[in-house]
Length: 277
Length: 270
Ligand SMILES: Nc1ncnc2c1ncn2[C@@H]1O[C@H](COP(=O)(O)OP(=O)(O)OP(=O)(O)O)[C@@H](O)[C@H]1O
Ligand SMILES: [Mg+2]
Image 1 (tube, rainbow over the protein chains, first blue to last red):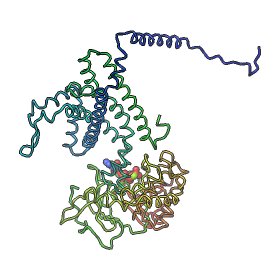
Image 2 (cartoon, rainbow over the protein chains, first blue to last red):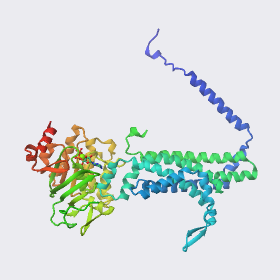
Image 3 (spheres, protein in one colour):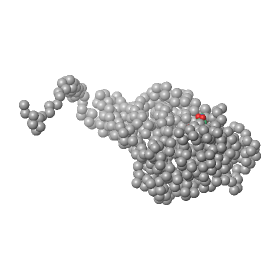
Image 4 (spheres, protein in one colour):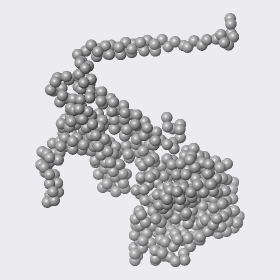
């Protein structure tokens, strides 16, 4: 037997189970691609509608709505998280009530409630000062923004609260000792540290928000799904237009996931490298 | 504060010619537990006072009252001749608002047992944070001052390191530099070396010793009796919320008058 080192060849162990599994998956994927290729889908229609102006406008509306509703959610979330941690029982129980109510009611239902607010309050305003007709104010845009943003605030408040609680008490004391006021220490010392805990779930929720905007189709807000539906009601290319909408959701969510990774890395600075992974 | 100030409390909000720290019958309780039972103490400018005493005797609580991390429940406390935490009108004491308390804290530095550096900021950023945000110094001035302070504590080369990349002794020295950056009149140390490995204690004590030599007024809660003896101008022994004995380090540490002091010192020694 020749055992000279240069003659020895390492033969990797064969994982037959994995090979069979991979082969089965490939066959299944092939079948799916084949099915869509020969199925009743007019791909040229998909390609054509992907970039028609109404769809691009709807895409913009979706993105704008997701961003604005998320901003509203974050602002409300921070306010109600701070209120919930307040020593004042009125403030903390108000925050608790808000979180309880808006987390419990389905978003779809909330959207319909806002949209139909005129049935309850025909006019809005401060009596004697000014008043609006509710139907004029509660446009699909406003109803969608309020419905999505306010319920998001209830979820974000809990995330922000967890973030604030994750910061060590000693950090508050060190900042107070430097003579920082409450706002300064929240903004400069506590929030940047809480962000490490807050950003990953908020990133997830933002991605969820992009998809939630599709619910605003029930209040006639011209986002992607509503627009796709309006087109297929006219031309009956149902699947083609749903694929167009799905394509754009995929693109937006993919881009957001990449951005999220960047932001997480930023807020993880100063944390031991081993803890980052 | 719910309770009425004790009759011995001093009448004015400002005392001319007062020592840097003046405590008169300072009381503090947590729920029903009386933690400080009438502390009387005067600390003059440039003095180094070391406080020793058993666990739970109220040493940290007293330090925390001085820079208002705790509110006193009775008596009166003055720093630089100014009443701490309250504004007196007639026989009523009004709690100061957030801004006024923040202003009073600026001139008092505190070094914590667990360092409490800001983990999201580098050593240099930790040191310039207070001057820039609170004292509104220009970034350039604050940076120059911070670099000289890091140099002074022997960490000029670590200015861009995050706290997680520093040893305990290095973190504590950055924390001292951070306090000094506020140009405090008074520095409080709460067991600054207790969380350190024995071989790192000396480097922190060396920095503190250097500070004492520059005439900084310091109140140090410490179990380092050697440091108290060599650097302290006076040593106070606290037990059960009271100052039992205070005086020259040599007499308090080597020849204590009180039985409790004697028992504590021999327990720490062995
Ligand atoms: N926030 C608080 N709430 C309730 N009790 C407290 C609080 N802070 C301190 N105490 C109690 O007050 C007493 C004095 O505490 P303090 O921390 O001042 O002691 P210490 O002398 O610094 O002790 P050590 O040497 O262990 O640090 C202890 O009995 C402690 O349990
Ligand atoms: Mg203590």
